[in-house]
Structure formats: structure tokens, C-alpha cells
Length: 397
Image (cartoon, rainbow, N blue to C red):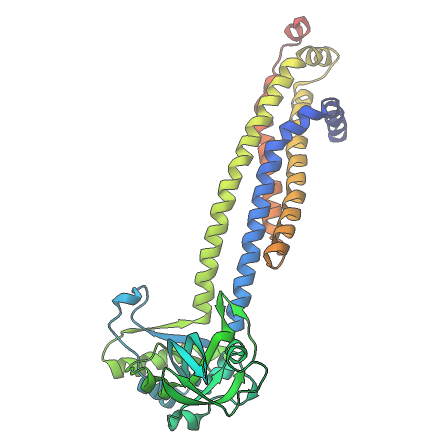
């Protein structure tokens, strides 16, 4: 028996029992459908988060310095970073292009008889514009002179401006931030929400003015931009030496963009693997269903097997016949599951607002698993059929 003859015969036999064939494939269809849709959704979510993170910074040359060692809980951090640490890094690290010390507090902004509770009042320097791909739509941003002179000036987000000033330009107007008078010098470009943070509700003031306003002796973090991606490792070494000499110990951590993206990728890949593994259980159920139906089929067609053997069919021919049927059932189920899974993930991503991402490896893996399911679930029934004695098979009623 040739392979083409085996496939033709298998399709004809399966076509006679369309409903049973479909129900047999259903377990494989559901399993592959679940794997494809969940993996694609996971990849889409990963792509969305990457896009959001890259929208915050300028790529692999960006890094952040935080107090405390890696893995240390925030509440347990006794160490601190200061504005003077940022100045020292800027002056003593030749591989560093820009340094930006930051302080962050919620607060209330008042203009005449209106007030707005702002979740983010940030003490910043002029380096933020280049570091975070941000800018102003009106007026100007904070300058080095503003920081050095501790000027009480501010740049407001679009939502704050709309709430307090309506359609009028706020540039040149005076507002009160936590009771202190600040002059509005600019309006931030509209940024939208990034990772659930509404960037249009930010208010920026000079880092030195923020330290005075909130009576702080430390900064939340220090953003750093290396001169090139090839100098990132050198910049990390230089920053470590400067801070260790100032603090007397290593009570800080330097998080590079590459490390952050790698950590995110590891977490997302682990989650994708877990949900795919759970969904793959359905494939095992589908394989058991195929084996069960193939065993029933061997019993039902015992007389047919006897006749085929009596007219010259070899064991190999019978083995190929039943194995081909199992493989076709499994591969057809896998193909239908892939198409349904891709369609489902496309619709879900459209409504959720995620980019439609197809993970090619999940398609190849599903087809391979479907092939293995058919091979193993059809193997035993096919061997059982091949071992039937033709005389006994012909006498079977």
C-alpha cells in the first residue's frame, strides 16, 4: 500500500462517519485553539508593554539609579540618594551624557478659585526632555538656570491646564502648589496613559524647588543617559565607583534598560508558558479520545481486516491504514484549532486594544504536538489491528 492509497482510504473511511470523526477531533481542536489564542494574546500583551516602556525612555543607553540593593524591599531601604550624588555623577563620569535627579510627590495645585489634586508633582531637570522623549507644546521647559537658582516655576500637563485654565494659555500665570506660588512657564506635550499612569496629569518643577517645597533631603531616583550603547557598561562602572566613594558602601542599584526588558521578557514568557501548558492538557484529552475511537474502530472493522488479510494485505498495510486515520484526525483537528485560535486572538486583541501578534513557534509546536498525538494515540490500535489473525477475524461477528 502506498502512502497516497492509505490517505485516500483513510479519508473515505472517516467521511462515512462524519459526526463521529468531528467529535473525535474536538478534543484536539479545543486544545490547539486554547494554546494558539492564549499564546498570541500573551505575545500581544508583551509587545504592548515593550512599546509602552520604550515610549518612556530613549532605549538601551538609559538607566536608573535607586537606593537599596537589588531585590531589597522598598520599605526596608534605609539608604538614600541625594541631589549632590547626581551632581557628582555628572561631573566625574566621562561616559555619562545626561543626569537627572528626581523627586515625586502628590499635591494640590490652585488657580484663583479652582483647585486640582495632582497625583504626580515631579522635581526634575532639563535632561528629562531628551531622556523621556518629552517636550512642551507651549512655552518652555525647566532650564539649568531654573534648577541652579531654585526658581519656583512649573510646567503643567494638558489635563491640569484644561481643568484650571480651560481653553486659555496658562503661560505666565501664577498658581499655588502646596501653598507656594509658582509661575507657569510651559505646557507639556500630550502623552496619554502609559502603563496605567496618566502622563497628562504630571506637573514638573525644578528638582531644587521640589526639595525645598517638600522638605526632602533625598531624591527618589537618578536617571542617567550614557553617551552610546557601547559605553553603558563603562558608565555603570564609573557610577558605581563614584557612589561607593561617596556613600562608603554599595547601598544602591543601577537598573539598565536591557536588564529591565530582560526581566519583563522572562516574566511574560513564564506566564505564557504556564497558560499554554494548562491549555495543552486538552491535547492529552484529545489524544485519549482518538485512541478510544480507534480501538472501537478496530473492533467494528475486524471482519474487514480479516478479508483484507485473506486477499494478501500484510501487517504493515493494516498498520499504515489505521495509523494514517489517527494522524489525519489529529492533524485536521490541529489545523482547525490553529485557524480558530488565530481568529479568536485577532478579535480579542482588537477589542482589548492590543497589537495583533502571531507567534510562529506556537503554530509549529501545535502542528508537531498534533502529529505526535495522532502517532501515539493511533499506534496501539493500529498494532492491535495488524496483529489480528485473519481466520479469527473472518469468523468475527
